[in-house]
Image (cartoon, rainbow, N blue to C red; front, top):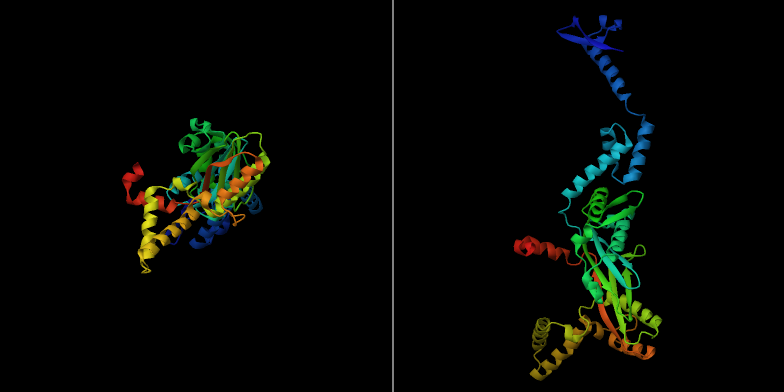
Amino acid sequence: MMLRTRPGARYGQSYSTAAAASPIYQSADNKTAFRYAFGVLSRRFSSQAPAATVQMNLIKQLRERTSAPIKDVKASLVECNWDIEAAQKDLRKRGKVLAMKKSGRTAAEGLLALAQNEGRAAVIELNCETDFVARNEIFQYLALTLAKQALLVEIASQLVSGVHPIGLESLEELKLNLEHPKISGDTTVQNAITEVAAIMGENVRLRRAFLMSAPSPGVLSTYLHTSPQPGLGRIAGLLSLEIEDGNSQLDALQHVGSELAVHLVAAKPLFLQKEDVPSHALESEREILKSQAESTGKPQMAIEKMVEGRLRKYYEEVVLLEQKFAVNDTINVKTLLSNLSKEVGSSVKIGSFFRMEVGEGIQREEALSADDPVAQAA
């Protein structure tokens, strides 16, 4: 029905908009005419949107595709006149802008992801703001994908066995192909992180990545603690065992190596052997122990013995070879390796070890950055 303004008809002191074909306006007052016209207009415009059942179906489909919040899904569909493809693109644009805004927020939760082959292992830390996001399958898929990508990185130091950091800038620029129903296609590592951050609605960042090369001859052993699925966890232990005779029983090495990787997670060693403890750390510990012993009021000779005894305890806490073996605390790690060497008929030693935990040191890093802009720039 066409509507027009009838300039010749007055209702009180105002004009009325009405349908020319309807005689009702000949006797209706101004309020009745307005309500009728508004109802006609509303029906005309609402008829352009799909039915409620179709709307709900589109919202459900787009929600399944993107995992975006329902309110954002509906807003994009309305903005794009219920075109689901256009709405999906709109959501991605909105999400990336939101992800950039949230990039400065603290992200201390997340997961470690581990990828390994015969010669080396790569472990990365992907952070988010909440444990809820860390349990999300999209976040976990991205973490595993990044670990596999890190395993392919070529760095000059990888020729030497040990632990080597991977530069994040070079890793973030790498190309990768995502094959997940909700994030797929060719992209870069950085763009993939940004897209997942947009979907999750949280700050998501790749914090660090390391590569460990296996000795030759020898074995590389790994363990992930609190693992929601293979290749993921909150704490990682990596360790390499070196052996002089490459023809020895590698199965025995693998078994002990796996147990030692578990030990790393449980015992938290800081150094491999006593000689690795920095002199300043040792002197600081000695001063603390001496002060504690002097407070007992015992003679100087007794105090010195107390300090030496407590220093041995300190070594057992922070030095891997001196620690009680977590699987069998009747022996220490040094004795374990000695027994293993006898079993395989060749000298066995720990080449390198590495322990990593989600979120460790983040609060300290942020405090240093806030208090010392120069340190941050450095």
